[in-house]
Image (cartoon, rainbow, N blue to C red; front, side, top):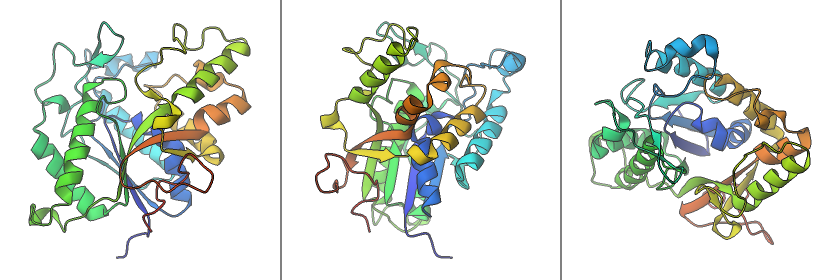
Length: 303
């Protein structure tokens, strides 16, 4: 069976991470006929539960959140049109590691971590599971987190490490023939946020009257996932797919508050806030349209 000409692989830590960072990108490429493959590393068992009637699912109560989030992910992918979504090693193979906040306001490893937590996973073992997927899918593009996991969550950091190591191993001609034929991924991106876009968004929403929007966030001292334009390589315009992205976020109801300020944005602001997704190119060559400072297609130069 032949593969679609364009193939993109996204590696994320928990259900819901994918739509927040890349939902519009995924929907765009599905509609354009590309194969979009999502690999999620855990079921997100340690997440908070934002739906009061489902609070009993939490890890410190029934510990049944994982299977519920698996269903949320399936619905989110249905909305985006993604038919190839998998859990690394199978559903529940690695458990959500949980997290706590450090003195700098960044996520870090929790004091007590389950023995089967993704944070404790053997790097080679976990990477080999991804190597097999890479060699099967043979993507031209891989998307994951940066070395800090965007904001420090141990599972995001581990997903970055696994994706990075697996990318290298998968390209090794003589490495693990049993995992498939070697494949060197042409382009690897780390998802990011544009500092300039974030500053403008905060300004617009507050000028519109919502002074609570990102309360306490200093536009001159933004979180570590925000990068200046000089460090942004690609901007995917997913504006036509904003509604699909927002609906897929709503599907993750235990994790994303649908009545929060992000969903109350005016349509014009929401289109800009959620429609553009930003990337840093860390492997491969940027191919930008003439006169543009940014790539507008993650596949540019791979065909």
